[in-house]
Length: 273
Ligand code: MG
Image 1: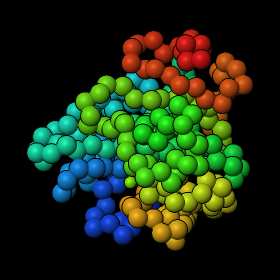
Image 2 (image 1 turned 120 degrees about the vertical axis):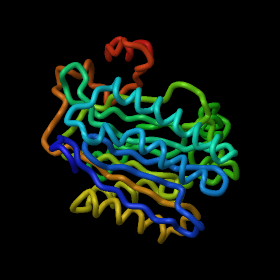
Image 3 (image 1 turned 30 degrees about the horizontal axis):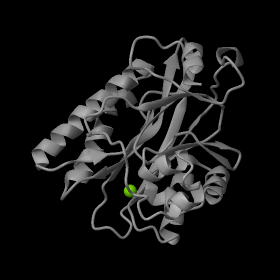
Image 4 (image 1 turned 60 degrees about the vertical axis):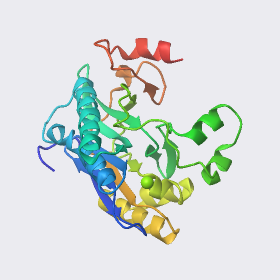
C-alpha cells in the first residue's frame, strides 16, 4: 500500500480451467477494483488491464473525490475502446469495486459498477449485494419473468448488457457509509457464479485478514468447479466511519449520479426513489 490510507485490502486471482486469465484487479491505497475482460485472443486480458490501469494514479493519492472516480471511469472507457481498435475486434470488460472517497469532507465508499462482476458488503458473515448486474438474466428477474435462483442456472447467464469499452457513457454508483472493519467483497463471476452467497459470507467474514479471505474465496471457487477465471478483492476501513449525521436517513446506501457537478447526496436520493 502506498500512502497511509483509511482503507486497505488485498486480492487473489486464478486462471481456473481457462487457457488464460482475462481478469485483472487492483487493491492499493483508496482503490479496490476487479475487471473481467472479454474479447478475442489477448483482447480480453488487455481490456481488463487497461480499465484497471486507469485507476492506478488514484491508488497513490491520500485523498480521492467522486469526481476523480468519474474521470477514471471515462479514461477506462477510452482506453478499452483503443484496445479494441488495436486488436481489430470488440474488446470489453466489466468493472466494479469500491473506492475510498472524501465527499463533502466525510469518508465514504464509492461503489461503482459496469457489467456483472459484483461488489458486496459484509455484515458479520451476512453478505449484502450492493451492485446490480448489467445482464440479460437480471433484466428477466427485474421483469418478474424468472427468479434470482433461476437466473443463476439460466443458459444465457453470461450475456451482459453493459461493458467498459461499449462506448456508452455512464456507470452505476452508490455512496456507502463506511463502517469500521466491515469488509467489502469484490469478485468476478468466476466466484459468484458457483459459490453460494452464504458460503462467500462466512468465508469472508471469518478469515483473519483480507488477503486470507481473498485467497480462500478463490480456493472455494476452484473447489466448486468454476469454469472461469476467478478474481476476488477483499477490502475494509481500518478505523474510520462515516458520521451518522452525514447520512441523511437510516438508509444503507443509495444510487448517486455524478455525471454533472451536482453531488448533493440527499437530493439524489429523492430522485432515485
Ligand atoms: Mg468471468
